Image: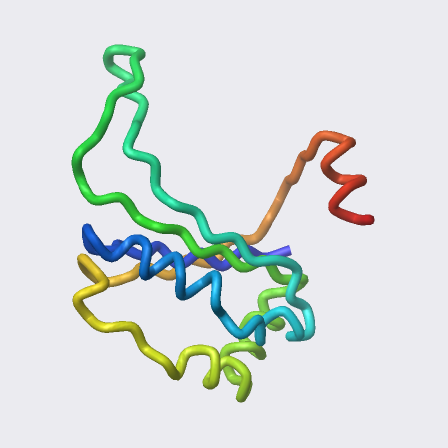
Amino acid sequence: MFVVTNRIPVSEGHEADFEDRFKKRAHLIDQSPGFVKNLVLRPVQRRFNHATGAWEEKAEQGYYLVQTYWESEQAFWDWTNSESFRIAHSNRPPAEMFAGPNVLEIHQVIQSTEPRAFSQASSA
């Protein structure tokens, strides 16, 4: 399995609009061959300070993470070359919604563990 993560810095004051775009998305990716799931993660304004061993509130910009899971890396590339991808990305948000450039990363899953109850529920 492959995970494609888009790290997106959303400008302060645009968080609700950004999240709303995903809630109202067309779900075109859901029908793509090899697609497994999509997660949209909101940043939490805390981090662990390894020097002190304490959790601290942080003020700097966090990244939203948009993760898509794929059966293969090729399935992701096929999606990016599809008409559905073009349509899904045709309604570009305003530039001021972003605090900087996004970062796209691709990872291959080498291990995954889930509690038994979760894995049974997600496969039902």
